[in-house]
Length: 243
Image 1 (cartoon, helix red, strand yellow):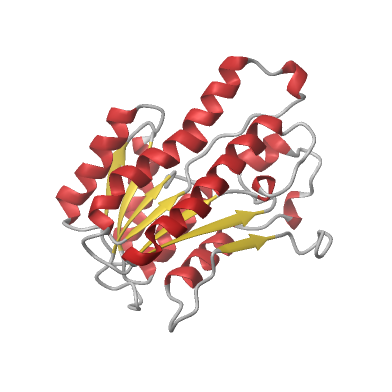
Image 2 (cartoon, one colour):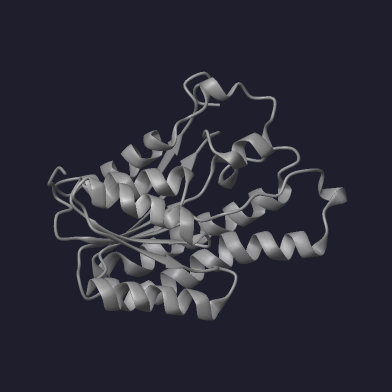
């Protein structure tokens, strides 16, 4: 395991069982952080935990459903109790909903907002008292290109990610004087199961890889000096530049 500026830091990663969350968790552990892995599926978390422990790192697995406030409260508290501090929060967990708005139901709207927007809010709220004890600290919200643009047949998903972007911008100002940096990473189409559901027409060989997003998160967390990057927009190499 490599040591770096993250040695001695504790990170909490939601949606850590697969895809972008898994890649970020492995990258943070490889660079010295201890990681609290949070998702709904214990088997996936335990697999990631085993990978981290296999490289000489430390991780714990905590199951939680971000739809339920009590579950989030318990998960954050459990992670801090076991790992004794919290320096980094990566809000990655999310779901998609795709299709024409005219065909969407109110239940679908409520569910995607509950997971993507309300879940991110709950994790941030519960983590803040612990982050304030170990400054400088970081929150990175994994949003999406649809959080800054509009795409046909992604109205519900886009609305939820726009909500996360708005909260991220406000929270960054709210916490700036307290030594907590709040960032947004907005990936384009990334090679995850959700991308296949959203855009089955895309050639998956040309998609962004989860490791690319993990590299971006590590970059934000290890920047030296007085510079801060608030938002990283990441596009596929094959997509149109500056579109």
